[in-house]
Image (cartoon, each protein chain N blue to C red):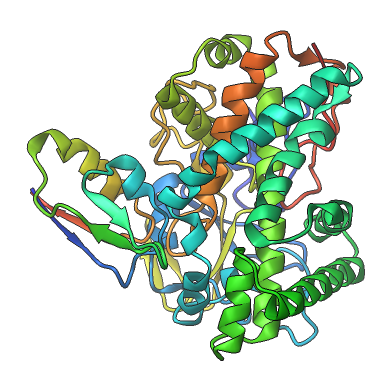
Length: 405
Length: 64
């Protein structure tokens, strides 16, 4: 990484990746990390929050009670213009405790390690069925449409109680919602359509409850513990987060492996659950698709790494570059499926760490652990330069991945 | 080795269960950590330290 940053200049965030390094964070982040753990950056609205680039400082600040995730506080560095009409937080990921804990605890039950393990056979069946269909269909095919997107969409639909038949509707609106450059009104409209859709579904669960998570939320509404708007907004969060992130990991992970044939070979030749689980952790670390950073605001003055973060200062914790910190992960820019990467911050850190991580891990273990063994001749059906990357997404990935076998 | 957990801080990430299921479990109703063995045998010590290190809520304290 030869890029240097003039300390007198405040670099823009986010910034572009290097054209020939689609799996690496932008060079400016590497340069800033080399200079120190904290730097000021300029974001879309002209403000200059702190960017935290090193692993230890990121973990320390994300776990610090003097640091707030409350989007309504002055100084909070929003990643895009506000979505709700009244400026309120649209989900518990943008709130502090005790409100955050109250809402999050209502939806934690389906994501315990034990409950997630009970879903593994069903996920294996989904993955095998999609591979059967793919092998029986046209060759080449777009792996995003044929495999990466349907796997997590089918799973989260089943878990939430959302009809998969509506997948085009919610996938299209999710795409708009998480685009970094989408028109604010267009994003707000997509969000409103999703809330309306989930509100309607919650209404149906109130009358005809099932075994799914939306039905559990409907019970909470009846018990007076949750408002219908809170339930619908939680449903949107879980639906969008539940399929967009994992889908991007499956597709981008496959591309990264195709570009690292020795690593792909490890997965092709193994059914060892420990090796596969370790590979998932390393791909999460290396690709870190949540490339827009965790956003926070300081509640008090905080001394860290020789700097003082003032109360009211915004913080962006860039976990993509944190996971490439050489102090935490030796030779960090090398994809090494055998390394112990479990301490990565791809799911964040602190009380807001990803709710669905056990489910995401299991889905990725089944997907990576099956696809390359069943389709050992899988290859890219175009050049890397022609792959459309989601540079404009809140979540990184590929829009399409043409593959052949 | 002695383990102390803080159930109020726990956010049910389940990473302790994945690291060492002999020592940690989760409540069915909300995924909050349950300590199965507060004084685990020496052969589990390194896995327990790993569990404490990856706990995002810093809800596991290990006293050596």
